[in-house]
Image 1 (cartoon, rainbow, N blue to C red):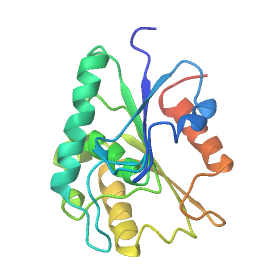
Image 2 (image 1 turned 60 degrees about the vertical axis):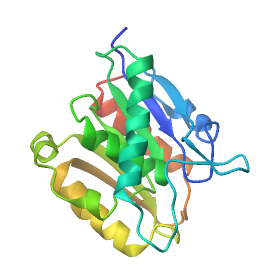
Image 3 (image 1 turned 180 degrees about the horizontal axis):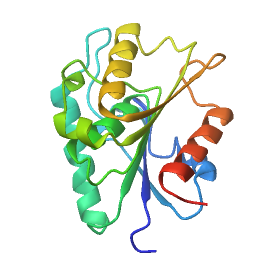
Image 4 (image 1 turned 30 degrees about the horizontal axis):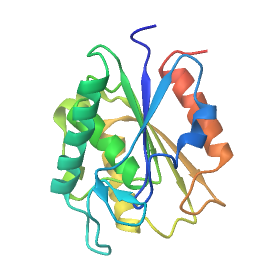
Length: 195
């Protein structure tokens, strides 16, 4: 189908566009996918959506600029009627939520794995809160990378603006596990009405 959804894979900080390709075996039949490379070259085969200097809070301005680059790719590569479902890990999860915030009518659902929202990005989005699109948010309870304040504000923002499917995995650190991807697959089949 020409208007079948396309899943956009958005890798984490310091990684590359091949990192999440292995997750495509969990995607439901009926969806296509594309894996994008972040625009910032870190010089060792890794890429960033925008610079980070933890423990300083990430810049919303950087996230905004990066999401514009993603939409530029979408606009140049996909027909306007094709729904886009971002699936991002860590910093890529942040970008998945930014895609949802910036063009909610184009994004029927989003998957955020070990991701978060910035301080500024956690503000009210009245239009998004009215739509309440479905979001899968998965994270490991042993994750030492995403700090507690980021987790707390992300939970608050997601609960206020989306139809949240929240999943926490007791034995998982900052990563993705097969059981989590089973849950992602079930989520996508449900929200996209796919077999």
